Length: 235
Image 1 (cartoon, rainbow, N blue to C red):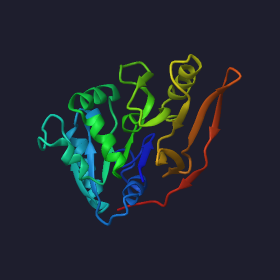
Image 2 (image 1 turned 45 degrees about the vertical axis):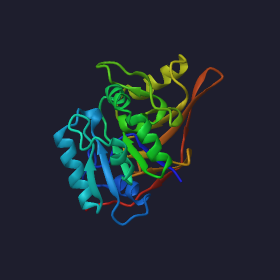
Image 3 (image 1 turned 90 degrees about the vertical axis):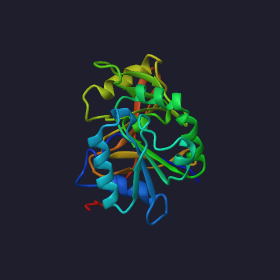
Image 4 (image 1 turned 135 degrees about the horizontal axis):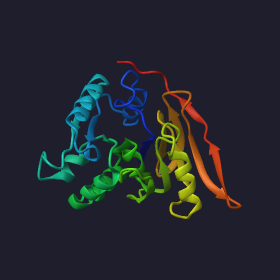
């Protein structure tokens, strides 16, 4: 069974007082003390970001680690990744992150880990990277389409209603044929794929949601998806 959890935003870095989404990710492993590895590549491996991950995931009872591509923990990247139960990808510059991953062959390693049962998860850049395409602000002042890893079909747009230009930009990109139809994901909401199929939407705030976005008769169509409210997690 494969698991992919794509958050529009939220988790330990955006909701430090409610780790419900992070708790949900760890629960999918079925392990009492899962090995959770943070990939902070998109945020230029921010030390502060890494420290926040260790703090949150230690409190959640996981065994935290992180993978730096500038200070490699080992020459055996495949072995390092394959022993993890969760790979959690942070936000930041998706385009730069994917370039580094491809240079190190990490894109192929992550696919293999996912197919072997490792839970892949992330927010923002760490959410859209798994789809065929995503809406990114990797270039300052622009929201554009980016070709991503293609583990999941279609496209995704994070921060769907929290950033004023996200929704209209996604609509325009779809209408112009620059990006495929897909999903708009709010902060505090996540899409959970099992075996490559969308099984549910979960959320840590009842104001958050996710939408299926497509076109019909030359117009944008949005379908709000039913969402499961997660119990608050304060640890």
